[in-house]
Length: 217
Ligand code: E4P
Image (cartoon, rainbow, N blue to C red):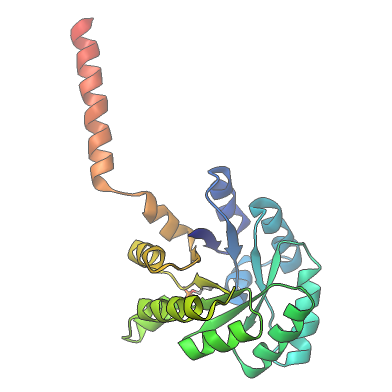
């Protein structure tokens, strides 16, 4: 399973690329709005750092506007994947952009039929939002299982990109279900590193080592 980072912050991405952990990045208008500055320049910088697929989202709501914006975003860097919301206009835009060889990530997916329609028009990725489903008392990961099953039976090339990830359990379940990609905010990637027994174990190893060195001296 590939790991993408879900942020518009170059500062947050830099240390992760240095570790060699990232396969790509996702942004959205809310994340980009937090950064200020020139969004195109930020996307270009993220592409340079990640050297993998970087989703940049359109803000137009009509198909023609999405197509225009999508072409423009795709022109920023060859790593850009154009993100469109799942609406009728988004589906139409996806179809056109995909037919031009532009990779499209259809976002705000909350049901398996939506994912299926996006795959039918050539989406490279679909982004089901698991955390937001959990927030309304549903089980977001059930949707991932449904979409993974549906795509594997139908043989679609569309990748399931698990989004709105809120905890490490989402990440592990995504992998076990056969999702292709998980996109995590940097804080969740941080959590993936942590285990108290690792900290306790390391502390004990070092203490024992130092005690032995002291005894030898
Ligand atoms: C996905 O690409 C979105 O940017 C993101 O995962 C949304 O997550 P949220 O529900 O935490 O805003």
